[in-house]
Length: 177
Image (cartoon, rainbow, N blue to C red):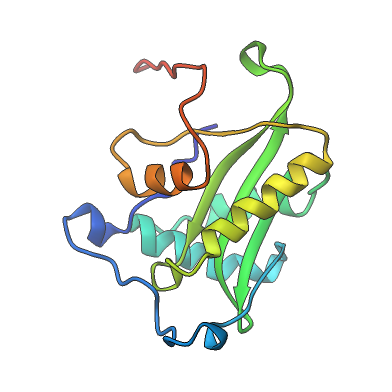
């Protein structure tokens, strides 16, 4: 179920431009807005659709509604859909679930999607989201987390490596149908 979300670059970044980093944060560390991580709510769909559209260049409202139904409305110990909120505004999200015995692997957490509004990046939001979903996976009884990303997406590769992730024991294969 590769969603292509995990760390997608903005349309501008894909065209060789740069994304604005850090938003309007002040230089004083205590002036940084507080980030709150919480479970997704139905009312969060509009900002999630907007974040994804900003990053991918495509608005996928029906898709996000179905993702919410599967991972948000029916979330449990194994399914997680979390948002990062700053000053009452959703600025990021992470989605994942515990999967059992796929490819012979003992149960582990899978992060399917993580994204942060480009203007809110470089402020620890992505790290907080990943930490929160990993804590939920631990509570569900697993001790390993995995994800998959495009090999040319150096932005998200750098992010996951900075969080301690490294290449795993599996090789993804595919073919055209």
